[in-house]
Amino acid sequence: MLAFETDCHIFSGCGFPAPGLQSFVFKPLFTVNGFEFNKIMLLALLSTVVVVWFFWAAFGKAKVVPGKLQMIGEAGYDFVRRGIVYDALGKKEGEKYVPFVVSLFFFVWIMNLWSIVPIAQFPVTSIIAFPAGLAAIVYITWVTLTFKRHGFVGALKNFSGYDKSLGAVLPMLIVIELLSNLIIRPFTHAVRLFANMFAGHLLLLMFTIATWYLLNGFGVVYAGASFIMTILLTAFELFIQAVQAYVFVLLTCNYLQGALAENH
Image (cartoon, rainbow, N blue to C red; front, side, top):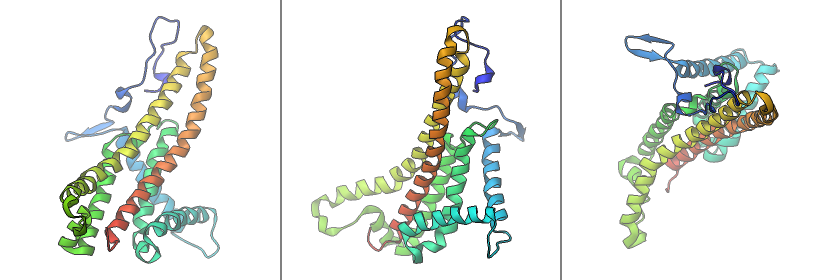
């Protein structure tokens, strides 16, 4: 729901058209053999195109003396590599995972950024299917790497926090650790990103629609205050979008570090 999609104003006999779940549902742009392709899917596809295009343009013809685009690309790549991957996994172990984490970071960030882009005005990650899909990829990578590194028995010990020195509390600890690692961890990984983007989009919608709704009579005074809040929230959302992409890949690296560690 966008502000200009309603003619309702205060003092005109209609109530405030509050945003809700209907603001996250879009009609399909087209349907092929029962498969519906909507705006959210288009934005996700465009996110992939933007990330691929940017790095292709930045590094496709890399130069010793980089141009502006290559400098930006190198800065972004180096930030994730040194500031996230190396810090969590170390240079030796982490180097092979840099492309995966860099791709994940910029993909999540671009999907978040659509929230403040005119016409698009929707964060793809506010639909749970997308964070859940990305969390599933991380989860599968982490579990596979754990079994590969430690073997079947070693992986089970890694997941369960097995330590025979714990004595009587060991069975209870194993249940808690297995539940935490194999069920709760991937769930919270997805929900953390989803919930922040969902709530942020609702807030932006609330004040954007309120600005339009109050543009009538004396309500214009309040519309100005609502508009200022919209600007401030947009700036804050820019910060949150980057932070959530950072947190998502930071947790990814922490999970990979746990798979690579000798002791859980």
